[in-house]
Amino acid sequence: MIILASGSPRRRELIKKITTDFTVIPADVDESIIHVPACDLPGELSKLKAYDVFQKYPNDKVLACDTVVIIDGEVLGKPHTKEKAFEMLKKLSGRKHVVISGYTLISKEKEITRTVRTYVYFNKLSDDLINKYIETGSPMDKAGAYGIQDKEFDLVNHIEGSFDNVIGLPTEDLKAHWF
Image (cartoon, rainbow, N blue to C red; front, side):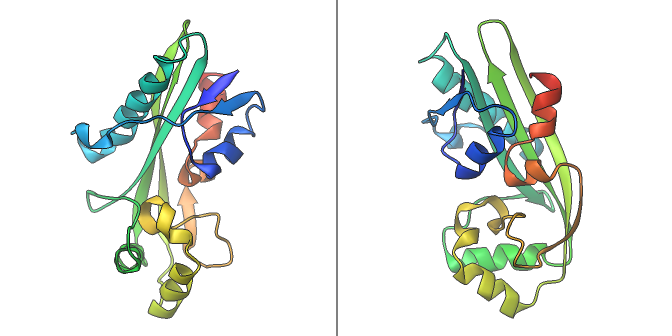
């Protein structure tokens, strides 16, 4: 069995593409203690989370993941206000950014930490579309203030890379390197 060290409902759904033999035990870590360049942040945070859970369950396999949205060298986290969500979506509008997920898998036999990049090209978004999207509440718990899976809003023009990675768990890379 695998322990998914994440409370994300999206990661719970994505891991089902790989295995149904898992349980969820979210990590409890202070993410602010990691000070590395933005592109290294997801891998380092995934290690921190994986070790937090693995130390409590050393006989199990633990999977932890962290995902960041980066534009112009700035990490766009989860917005805490509607105004911040609007600001983030306006910044992404009509532009390319990168989504990087880092994952760590630990067991007694093996440890692997990898990062996966996906380039996302946003459509030009009107203020009206941004406001309607924010009113759904969907942006508030997502890095970069958007969910690529929110199909009813025409946010993304196209991507280069893994769709699942943008949602929050690079399933293809996981399958290739662990399962």
